[in-house]
Image (cartoon, rainbow, N blue to C red; front, side, top):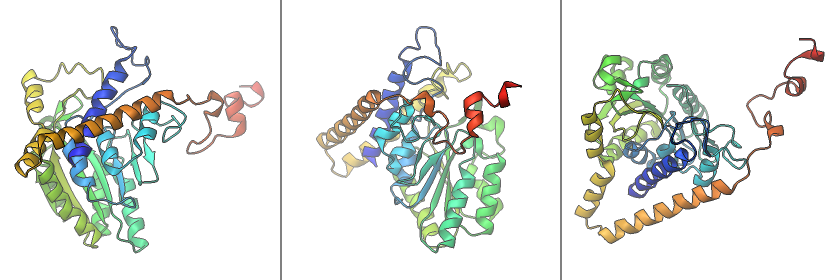
Length: 334
């Protein structure tokens, strides 16, 4: 778990550097090698690592718009994921999905930029596993700002009614974009949502990867043994803005500093030292993680950009040939 966490943290820090290339001094979201929005998850590492360590490649994971730490923990190909974020032809989605729409069928991972919309596909994957009589499970990650969404609540209901092998993991970083949790949600503890659907719910109240590991082990084993869905809420923290370029003028400085003090990676490093792992061993893990990330970014930047003539290829539904060639106007009459 420690290696997955330091890989994810360094990956976010390196993406932050690459993203800002060409976007300063005046911030231009369309400039640079990574155009568009970028949502980083530094501070969420304990959640992805503590949950995904229990999963197999045939288990399904859906993630929200802040997905990189979860993808890394699930085993998504780091080079292809990075190429996708840079919009390159060899990316997971041939450069057409970007960082919010990653898809890797080799390890059954997908994410969505639409709030709570990873929940219904996870429930569908769980239903498929049950009908196939396999012991595969599905896990849906979402933010605490998504727990009032219909997609989430309807997914809880169907998972409970059908007794499906799915686990919902809420990552509570205290902020729904610019809104503090207590201004938009009626419950302080999001795991209480489980009570309304007669399923187990548990909150991990600190950024502690070991505590997440233990909670996730119970929920995932329960699902794998055919005993139905569970809900976990994990307290994480947001070390960066909602998106790159977010000045966070709405956020008290004390809250930012408090978040930086709640570092799950340092907490786990202390636990490992207490169990006899040396600083040299921890340094070796960090160096290996940094080397892997740097190699993936260097490889991605060398990859070709997609050919514009292939813009309509390898998308969910190809448009009629005529639409692709004349913009939809038949015979140029419209």
